[in-house]
Length: 239
Image (cartoon, rainbow, N blue to C red):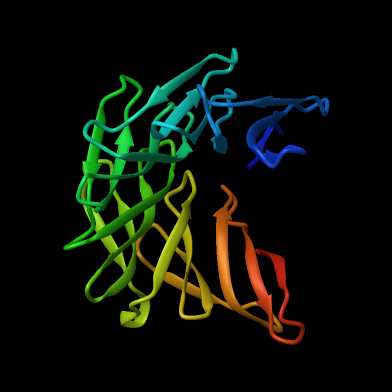
């Protein structure tokens, strides 16, 4: 994941097969880091101030973290959760992700700068997975219930808008940009959803199973696609 300052975060294995988080500065310097007593650390997102969110596993459980720009780290955990997985942090230091409870149900959360959590679920959902948040506090992701898997947009006031093009029951909306334009997939096609709800479907030549992963402020979509001819996974850019 890269921010607007061209600082990159991610995760990588060492020679002993332990997973660490890393941050790569513009000058190419790479800093590895780990959560407290972590057996593995996954860095998921970085904002323009260099604040990172992610999660780590230890012998006592799975926890979220915020790594501040000075390198200090704060562990975050939804109250009464067994697992907390942050997905993305915006430029206001608001974080979205999901957590599991003691009944093994999975719910979404938004963490405010104050540290307060707001939890939520999709309609009748057994699984809710927020994946993206913009600076206006709009969230996108996926939830599933007995009828299928659906994409969603959550507005700042907490309203959840289901995204199910053509009544599809297999939808994901992994990214929303600062203009409220989102991208996702259904069946084997990709789509761009305008703020007013208008959807524009797209496909990739010689590709099937399109999986958009991000959309820029200019509406440029990137993601992965399975090659129809070679059966390999390729990246794509859609403008």
